[in-house]
Amino acid sequence: MNTQKLTNCFFLLVLHWLPRVLSILLIIFLSLFSFDLFGQGTGFWRTAAAFLIHNVPSFFLIIVLVFSWRWSWIGGTSYILLGLLYILLFINRNVVMFIDLSLFTTGFLFLLDWFFRRDIIRAQKVCRGE
Image (cartoon, rainbow, N blue to C red; front, side, top):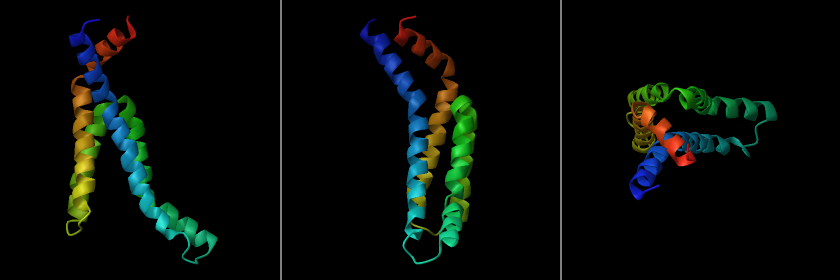
């Protein structure tokens, strides 16, 4: 396999996996904020309920990721729409920039994955030697 095909294969496979990895990292990052609930002296059930409530965005992103894993256009549109919704809801917060950039970047990469899906399938076959 020549270097041009190998480079193209590598680029397309990175394009396929990068939005999925970024989604998982974003879900983990958002979930980390819910761990500040522990050690506050509230009872088990109150802590468990607060933990679940704080993780609702993470649960929602997990559901979006499950559908996006197969249909990347769903991930692209969902992450971009969630980024716009996040801007509207939390316009006066400082953390908006990081989370929005993560949502928009992940959505854009999912859309690129969807746009180049035929090339990615071909690249996967070439990389496997088929």
